[in-house]
Amino acid sequence: MNLTLKIWRQNGSSDKGRMVTYRVDDVSPDMSFLEMLDVLNERLILEGDDPVAFDHDCREGICGMCGMVINGVAHGEQKLTTTCQLHMRHFKDGDVITIEPWRAAAFPVVKDLVVDRSAFDRIIQAGGFISVPAGSAPEAHSVPVPKADADAAFDAATCIGCGACVAACPNGSASLFTAAKITHLSLLPQGQPERESRARAMVEQMDAEGFGGCTNTGECTAVCPKGIPFDTIAQMNADYLRAASK
Amino acid sequence: MAVTGAVLVLFLIAHMLGNLKIFLGADSFNHYAEWLRTVGSPALPNRTVLTITEIVLAVCVVLHMWAAVSLARRAAKARPVKYAAKRKSQANGYAARTMRWGGVIIVLFVVWHLLDMTFGTVNPEGGDATPYARMIAGFQPDRWWVALFYLVAMVMVGLHLRHGMWSAFQSLGLTRRPQVRSTLQTTAVAVSAVLVIGFVAAPVCILIGVVK
Image 1 (cartoon, chains in turn red, brown):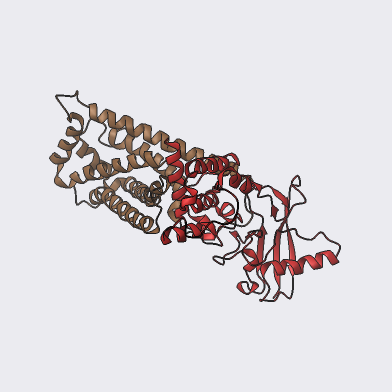
Image 2 (cartoon, one colour):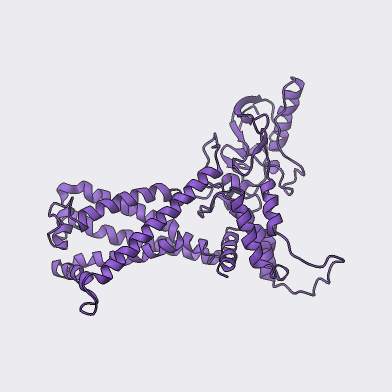
């Protein structure tokens, strides 16, 4: 199939940036979205043009590197799917596809579709850890964890930190990401000693990074490729309020 | 946002119940309005409870708006470059998307409503008439556009509460289980619907001549 792509091109953080239109012909429906961009880039390189920069790594939907806003939807309209796992069979011959980077003040554009997500790393550094003696792994049954808690913690822990939640949020809020990281630890016994200081530190770091506030629109969880539950945001709010009331 | 909103919802429920007294006749409605001014008397001077309520409501409205404006300003700062493609909502949150503009419409409505029913400035009967007379005169068929404005505003209130009521529980961290959230969302729809029906009942019945 033949496609028209409108892609955001921005040569470095100080460049103003603009949408540029490209045609890509003979796209196979079996290609992934990134493979389709690879085809475009091979041609651009042969023609002596600058290839479109985009982040990617595992291309298996588990590393969280890839991500772009496709026709106004983070990772495209296919639910529970990262951009690398989105296949061209979901598009039609002759489609015009708009491709943009995540838009957030806290995610400055590095080049084209690549954004700097270090803000997420700093949120994790602020409290996304537990203090345990290092060494060999402890006996698995020494700290019993109820099944329901283990499942809920695991659901939150599947967050790959891609940033789609921020990109989709009308407020540019990082609440779903931060909430997933807080919930994953706060539901487990190992996370209890630092539960309140963690919630406070991570929420304050999230605000300091310049993300917006949550208004519970639910856009984040709807585009999340890992389906991080909306309930995690309530868990974050509960932990934060408990910390703030002391 | 959550706490001030909760106070305003409680007020709306009381206000709707009071409005329904119009169906019990002029005396019942006027007595109720009188009672609001004399409740607690003679232990308390007249209008004590009413004045306190008015102050609490005014403070809540101001704080609620302040919170909304700061959230909107934060959102604008958090995304300085907008998307070129129209961002498609994936969450089916029509009510959530109308919160800000809906809120502005509701504020404009409240201003009109106070001028109409409280001060009587824009009411045909004026401020000296009985509450019942003001209400009846306000929604006569020749002023159909007033009733229509009330109807639109009440639908906006309904949408506002449909998102706002469960959202308040989420903000306070009380919806940590999916079942709790879905129950609250259903409750929010039901309470919003009851409030909208309760509020539009009087204007509509006056408009079509059932209540005279």
